[in-house]
Length: 487
Image 1 (tube, rainbow, N blue to C red):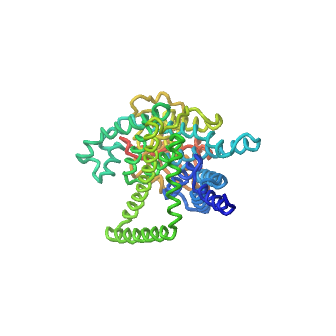
Image 2 (image 1 turned 90 degrees about the vertical axis):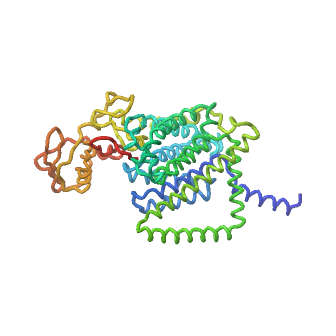
Image 3 (image 1 turned 90 degrees about the horizontal axis):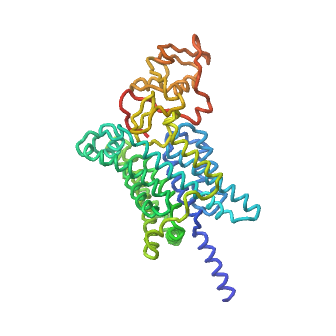
């Protein structure tokens, strides 16, 4: 081989390496991609300077998935951004935070091992991280399914299965078609979520869970609700951790070859993309003006996200098909037992497990993996089929507060819809302002509570709320009757 040919081969090899993916790089690209989708759902969070930094770091990680510093920066900023806006999260954001914490811990462990000359950073990080992360998804599936085992979830008039089905079909929740399909849909959701968790936990059944889970989340994403699509992105991105090395390699090669073709036709790609985006913006703007609302923008965004999920699922199935033809269907799933990786990082997975148990133990009811379940555990009663309120060891869900009259707009809004608050959330509201007047049925009687310039007059409540607990616990408002569908 001549010097020139060797040089040409070296340049080509460098270019190929830039678009090839080890298992951590493949997960990083998919995880950063879903992270970008999560950022686009943070409509209720301030888009402050930290948001801008996180957005830049996420984009950099998508472009440079093989660069560990870019990944570590994105993880740190993501956790900082979430902490800054606690406790106002939703369930899939909390799962994302737990996975980010596990991965950041794995990078730290791998870096320490490398300093001792014991391992390559990226392979060691992946080995430490993959097992605990798989375990976290398994736990979330099981808790989410268990939460749905309640009377109201199967009620076609208020159940989340009926609500989401009606949204997907653009039909009223009380319509005949929704009423007829609501119970089968509720049963299917419960069985599928618990089933996916159990099938993914065991090596011999993962090859069944992977295609089932991909199709399940793709069908969920047809519901035009951003939070549901965002959770589907998280779950589908995490499925790469359950794929065998052979399937992961095939997926990485498919993505790499596609990116190489796009790079080769860079000008045409950019021009086509810009033209498509421009046409979409014009079409959506005209449609919004025609109907007099922003619904067209919402549906366009949801439609684009769904299209992205379709592309990702196609990549998975095509990669799995390559391996199935060669080695059979069982070869698509990783053969590692569930309990692998760093024992230290399994502590985070244990926290995920504990978090899911908290509503049944009398603690927080928000971000406890009961999403879209209609679960009721407050005020000493429950609609759950088999988990009794007698298990509650915390008293944070009892002693509900009914607002009778107030000058606080948020409390007035709660009263207007006929809901009550837990004492914890009521005391959060009292602590949040220096001036408030409220008449409530609370603390065992009807009271008037006045706070002027930060000082209570005539009454000094003994708070169960503290600023730290307020960061890690939050509670929904409690309806007077059946539980409507919420996140």
